[in-house]
Image (cartoon, rainbow, N blue to C red; front, side, top):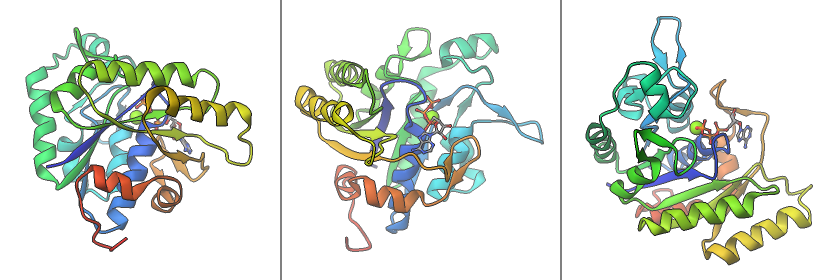
Length: 248
Ligand SMILES: Nc1ncnc2c1ncn2[C@@H]1O[C@H](COP(=O)(O)OP(=O)(O)OP(=O)(O)O)[C@@H](O)[C@H]1O
Ligand SMILES: [Mg+2]
């Protein structure tokens, strides 16, 4: 059992895209990788009336997992697009925290390696005062922080890393999502340098925006190739304690 927990500096920063990209690259290298979105809100109702999390659909497609894995990948799916603790209360659902932690451990035991996506940012409430950071601390997995390239990202990223560390969580890397190499100027480049300098955490990739990728449309075109090109996949595999079957 080995895993990484993928959090971000905010909601909508790109946790699902980056988690999917990593999963697709690992799968392409011949590694069996599990993915998980322990709690999702903003679920959408399918044609046959099931409440489904778009994040789980995207992650499963990227990792090549069958639909039958969905209950392991996403044990809790809530309809309101609110932080899970509030979405649960609004929809009359109780989130049992020990059950949720057990579901994460079950997924981690089901696959040789797994990538677990958080919800929102690191202090998003999952249930009452139980926050994403509490789940991260309990699972004791190394964390990756997905961050934006633009103005404000130094503050968000440094605070996120510091908050995780205070809880004993090892932050193994930062991944910048939405990087545009051609347009990156002094703002983006100095952000990156400052983030590494102030946190001491390496940036393990700068992932571009791609019109062929979409979480709501479950579009995963070229995800593995983009990950190989822009993310430090060898280092990620090392963090997962795995060997690369393709001999890279
Ligand atoms: N590199 C990218 N290329 C194309 N689209 C992207 C990229 N990164 C993010 N997006 C789009 O931006 C939106 C937010 O990304 P994503 O869903 O990965 O964020 P998130 O951090 O997982 O959000 P949440 O907190 O809701 O789980 C999605 O609609 C996704 O398709
Ligand atoms: Mg997501």
